[in-house]
Length: 341
Image (cartoon, rainbow, N blue to C red):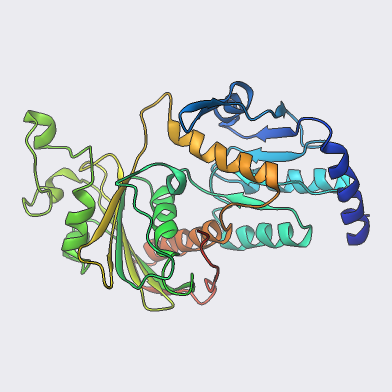
C-alpha cells in the first residue's frame, strides 16, 4: 500500500506528464452520454462556440479528471478512489448530482478528498444556471428570512443554499429541520409575502393561466390548494437564527423560484432559476463549464460543503417525515464554510 508521501510524490510526477497532452476526462454514470457530448463537440459560451480540448475516456485509471453523472455520486466514488490508489495519484472529481443520500457517507467522501488531496465538487445545475433577474446577493448581507419554491427537493435545496450561504460571516450549519405535508402546508407560518414574491418570478403558472392566458396571483386568489395535490414544506432553522422554507408545489408551477428579505434592501429580493427546455438543456452547459474550470485549474470553483450540507438537510427532513413530521434537532449538521465571490 502506498504511503501518503508516496501518493503525493507520484501524483506530482503524473501531473507534470499530463501537462504535455490533452487532459483525459473519465465520465461515469447514467447521464454520461449527455455530459460527454459537451466535452466532445463543445458548447456555446459567452456568445461563441467553446471547445474544452479534453479527451473523453471510459475508465478512471490513467484519467486526469473524473466526472460522475449520477444523482448518487457515492455509487461511483469508491471506484474512483480505488483507481486513484492504483495510479498513485488523485485527480479532480466532479459529481453532477448529490454526494450521497446519507450524510455520513457524504462526509466520508469529502474527508477522503481532503486526505488524498484531490479537489471534489458536486451539486445541481440550479446554482450555476441563469437567473431571471440575474441577482447575486452581496457577500455578508443580513438575511432575515428566505423561501424557495420548486418541484424536486434536491434541486430546490441546492438553489436555496447557494443563496443563503452568502449571508453574514458565512454558513454556520443547521440547528433543526421539519417536514410537513398535505393541507397542513397551507396553514404553516412561512411568509406569504415571500411566497408571493417568489411565485411572481415564475414563467409557468398553471391553472387559469393555461386555460385562457390570464395573469393570476396564485397566493391571493386561493388557487394553490386547488392546483397542488400533494404539497410539501421543509422548514430549516440555521444555527445563526436564519429561518428558511422550501415548498414543493407540483401542479401550480413548473420552475424554481427564490425570495428573501434582506435588511437594508428596499424590497424583497427574488429571482427564477432558469431551466431551459429539453433537449438542449443549456443549464447542463453551465454545470459542465464549472467542471471544466476545476479540471483545468485543479481548484473547485464552489465549496463542496454546500452539497454536503444539502445531503444532511434532506436526510434529516426524510427522518422528520417518517417520525410523524416532527421537528428534529440536527447537531451533526454543524457544517461551516464561506461562499466564494
